[in-house]
Image (cartoon, rainbow, N blue to C red):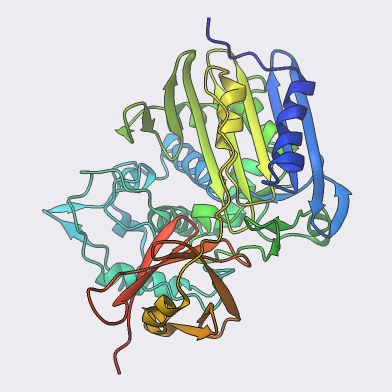
Length: 440
């Protein structure tokens, strides 16, 4: 019979030890569980590669797109109180002079944004980060407005699921504008203060900053934190396992709250994502052998996270990690042990290639209007330097693909029948961005 009861804490500790000590996929992971057994925290590892403090239930992590779950709860709560409507057009909550794209006579609604069916892209197409290690920090609300006013939807509204950070950033912004406060204040007033979540914030006090873990890339090198001022509702929150267990306690109705009904509304299946998963208001609902699991995950440049609950068994899980290696499988496995843990992901291995082939990749490639890749050769080594960024060596992986060791990224050069590569594709943060060769 499929099991949704938790393994013993010592079994969870073994999973974390394997991820950190053997597979070297993270530096510090914290797991929080809640259910009929009460609450439990299991932690392994440390704050950072250069910070030996042990992580625990009060350690603060970036939670990335789990922020979207908070935005979905805000929407559900504001709908329940009559402040906004799911079918309200986004345009109703935008300032004068900002145009929201329409298609086939249909307007983008708040529900379209909350279910990733707005037709808006994952990221604005004018995102040109001056610092790729903190890619959203310099993007402004004014830029978001300009993007929205000129963008043309490539498909009908409501037609297809397309995961959209843009859409959720706009949803959080719209709700905050309507409430007359900024997004962080709205979350504080409606969710974190009522639930006693004092370690959940965007702007960290000195005390919270002192409990903030360091993020790491795939090579477990420290990386900067992310800032998302214009699209905060898509991924800007930081939190701890203990705080997120407070949220799960409310979601499982073990501790009554005015937000309990909001969780129920946000968990209603509304639109298909794939064969076994539908999306509610931000929250994903996946059918499993032991019943539905309601969940969301998060990832930034140096952190990954998971939160989920199993209404049938009244159990919930939080997993927080200070590296960019995914932890969804841990969370889903703990909620239903029929769902297997993933096998280790092999690290790219440097391949032997003829150094003469490197010449065809040398040149400049336009990644964005003000961002150019300068690919150079020094002997039998290939290097890449992005505008205003350090130069990094590229290591051949095989074929036309090269990987970085200094950052979690790879580059694939488009093959040419004759002459140099006509373009390259940057693979980073789950995105594939093409850059054509700059001609003389």
